[in-house]
Image 1 (cartoon, rainbow, N blue to C red):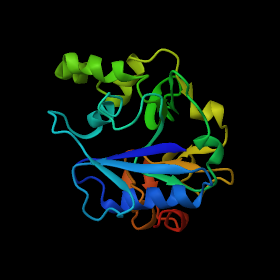
Image 2: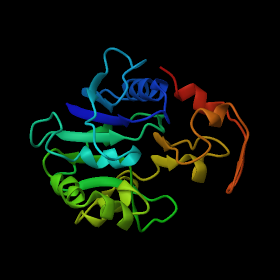
Image 3: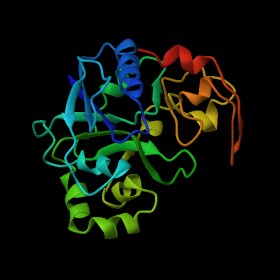
Image 4: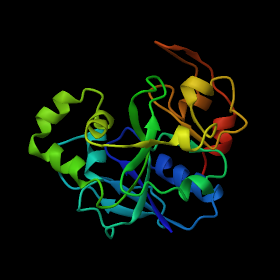
Length: 227
């Protein structure tokens, strides 16, 4: 059994992102799991998803991700936790990924554009092993945010010792939509990570022009991103 968590704060993502992430994992795994959503708004979230209220803290957005490392999480010490960003599509069987174990450290993404850097869109750790990430942030949250302009993932990177990377553990399984899927879904893909624009919804409904190109809608995201 593994506990899978996601985070929904504010109105950037609708409840569809929570529901469709859950359904994608359920369709593509035989590993028993519990699915948790930590959120400030449970409206529209499927009733069988375990929702937990986020604490009222003087932080916003991605900074709440650091709170997931705190002792206040409703898990027993040593519980294996896997975190998915909401802008993620599961496109193939992820049993091997869910059976991975980060032991006493943490597994995260190798940044798709800066491969020597850490990214936090997909994380695994054992509850209680990373509480220092949150505790150090709490010493001076404003200073921590100033020192980490790339957000929670930069702060996490600064406060972990020996991370492992999903792309090294599972080559040819985890892809960036913008980097690798603009012309279609790679045959070996099991997880596709979105970042920036287009969003998942935009990737099959709109033509998007931004700083890194022109993105035309595709059919395949709609096939996999559903409840």
